[in-house]
Length: 235
Length: 368
Ligand SMILES: Nc1ncnc2c1ncn2[C@@H]1O[C@H](COP(=O)(O)OP(=O)(O)OP(=O)(O)O)[C@@H](O)[C@H]1O
Ligand SMILES: [Mg+2]
Image (tube, rainbow over the protein chains, first blue to last red):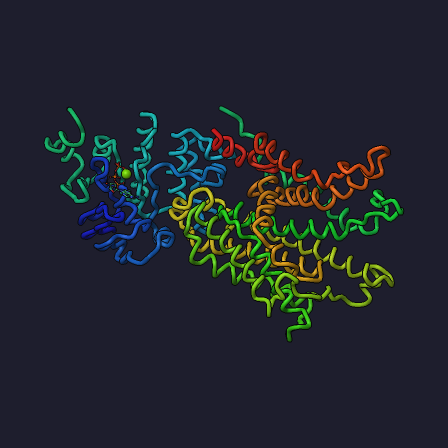
């Protein structure tokens, strides 16, 4: 579905990615893990078009993404839920969710997706008319994820969705992600909570200083002693 | 769990459409209402307010234009006076006898916004990617450049004297007699009054529709978070340019009415930075990002300057014991009072008088 080849990106003189290669197949959950500053968010930004790579190629469903601006990639079925909640603070919760579906015209399907998202995150239904900026951090995170889902993406890029959520909600969130896949959404997931992410994903890609150091099945990596020491801390 | 909080500004506006309508009817009828002939001068000549109200309408248009750019799209620009001036000057060029065009008011009403729109596109395309304060500086500079150019291109603009006479509004003779009988100058005044009011109402209605449309929601999203808006599939660059150019065009229409009302393009120094700041003050006072707030701000600030102060002046002059005293002159004190009011407002209601609940919450948050 998505293939990333030799991806390089720089911020001025800082080279953030130095040749990243990996693939995401349709229906997979792929976790992108690595330490702080490894280049995970940068990789997602390149895929969604928020950042222009300095080298390398990106192919989504057989189509070369180069030159396609971020807003048009949403219409191709890519949805990026960026790092840090970034809700539209002065708009209401309901308006935020509507904006998520602004590229779509199928009113009936939008309404049913809205119902589904409110079923997944009931707090959003309770806060419908509240300004998004006045939600708690965790509530904003749920809104950001719900909003990204409203475009009904085929590939969802999630950047640290569990940030700031209570453990119980994180569990629920991971169940939601697993459920999304069952309904045909492919997910590329960046997570600090690597242990949980590896448990959930089909495959994981481990980044370090802008390159892929290892890829493999999540459960295998979870038990790889070297990685264990480097990323997941003690036992 | 908590019940849903009270409805936002938009919903409140839906429930009270009669407020605007009532005001509109009052304004339409004002020229024929005798009850406002109150503040007569010593010779018993009443102070008719039509020309002053036209100024209020024109500034209300300017505030609506700025609201589209600053309030709805979040583009802090300080050069609105430049588009105002471009609209006025285009109206001059298109109507005075010095030039071959002589299209009359109705031609200028199309030409002025077209010229301002073009200027908006030319300025906006390269600069709108600048953020916040940088854009403010660039547009401030643009405003000064336009003013200076208008001053110095004397063979076209007649410099500080301005182009005149700008054509008055053409209307069928029957309509003119219907409005004011044989009184030709009153007919012209009433035409200007009602056309300006009509344009204002039309602009308000169009902007209200726009606000509730897909584009309006997209602009709100853009204003709150540009990066997230791009993630939703919105094209920030295009939206910004559309809002900026649209606001410029509306300011051009205001300029056209301004020159028509004065029958001259006036001294280009009228379209200076102070003017831009005054329009911004109206907007902030009324409530950034709300149409009713924009109108209210214009009515309060420009109405205060043009309508209330002269009325109070006259009232003071007629007060026994006070009249004639050099300090009994309200106009002399008005900007001091206005400054004080603005300070109090920013303490009490930083998001403006008409701000929706969501904006107030955000303003409270910003103030910490
Ligand atoms: N806007 C920027 N300007 C300059 N350098 C940047 C910018 N954004 C990221 N970088 C640098 O690029 C590198 C990769 O950053 P990135 O945000 O992709 O890391 P990450 O893997 O997402 O880290 P984290 O887990 O902390 O979010 C870092 O060294 C960072 O300092
Ligand atoms: Mg990151």
